[in-house]
Every structure is written in structure tokens, then in C-alpha cells.
Image (cartoon, rainbow, N blue to C red):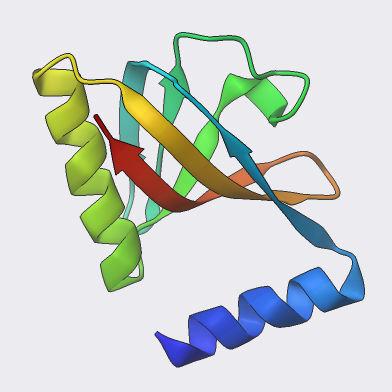
Length: 102
């Protein structure tokens, strides 16, 4: 956990990524590919912020797997994502860093 926070802090300090938030959002589609690649597409258009209108989830960490479980629950129960925090890289790919389900 501490190493991930340290790595994210280093990326932010170097200017290679920045923290952003959106909400409320609705889960349109969820995907999981291979051992560690997953993400979701919100119904709302965030393509100006996130490439391909997609927010990735890091499945190699316990927090990423926990947030993925929340996404599955939100989709299954038609719940709203009250707040979605993510790290936006210079190439405009976005990585989920926090999630509030309503």
C-alpha cells in the first residue's frame, strides 16, 4: 500500500500525472482482461479528460480489486458513482484512485 502511494506521489511531483475527480457518473460497461487490466466506461462523456472515455483499474493491488468489486456492485444494482477520483497521465489515460458509490 505505502509503495503505491509513494509511486503515485512521485508521479504527481514530477508532473507526469495529476489527480482529478468527477461525479456523479453511471457505469455503462466494465471490462477485465488478463491478470491485471480492468476498467470501466461511464455513461457520461468524459473523453475530453480520459482517453477512449475509459478509466482503468489497477487489479494488481488490493485497493484496485476492492474498487473493481464496488464497480461490479454499482453496475448490478444500478447505483450511481457519487465521486470518482483518478490519476490522469500525460497521454490522457486515467487510473482509478478512489470511488464513492451512492
